[in-house]
Image 1: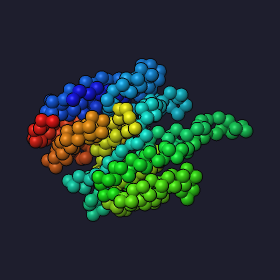
Image 2: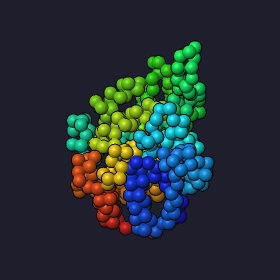
Image 3: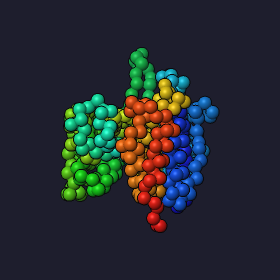
Image 4: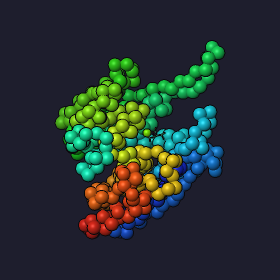
Length: 361
Ligand code: IPM
Ligand code: MG
């Protein structure tokens, strides 16, 4: 198969980890007889420096025309002035909205050998296998009105938590679809005791659940969910939730896995290319020092193979290689080890070579 993949390395450690994921994708292409063409574009702080805006129309057009987009991370202290009118994060949000990728899949699994890397007690981590589906193009991030101004002589800021029924329905439906291949339990997280938008969310979730009698739906308030993720994480299967709740809960959930550097994500819409990125940020403090963990981005590339290129066998091979590398003791600095970014990738590539050879399609 031939695929055009746009790379948006971004800022901080973004370029380092994207380069590693490309090494893995190239190895997959060679082993399985695919042709992947990569084109690199600026997005984020680097694009602000060059073009004065985090996401140019040309870059969005190129992304839309691609088969998939692989992103590193955006942002950094250089562009962090709270009074700045252009911000790297605007590029990311513009890209998510511009690609219509309303569902952000963030799987959280605990590798048995990394139980000690998490601050949680080992018995809490047994059996943890969660898929968080975060709504990505609505809610508090995008609702209008949004802005700053003076009202009656006082400085005021407003953000709006807004959802249309169809926005809730499509992401909850996806949660139920993905639950079919899992343990068939969906936890819908909201704040329905306070927020009107959450009461709509809950009603829509109930309506979707009525169409899936083989799958259990539970509702959970977001504050309770934050607690349960730490006290009894193995009780979750699929979690589906509002944009900002999902942002916060997935950083929390990454602690279960031992390091944020391990967690991948896929952002999907109804059609068009998916957007793949690790959930970690640009980590400017360690940029350029070979300390970044590339596994979150490599696992994001695996999700790209699965969801955008429909190559489940290749995706599984990459995931198995990452698991095997961790089992064999590959540890980057965030996991308390000494491997550089490149050495961690090399450990994955070595395992990939031992995977069963590609079968004729
Ligand atoms: C994430 C990040 C982004 C978000 C930031 C960088 C805008 O935290 O992908 O989780 O809030 O969505
Ligand atoms: Mg986040």
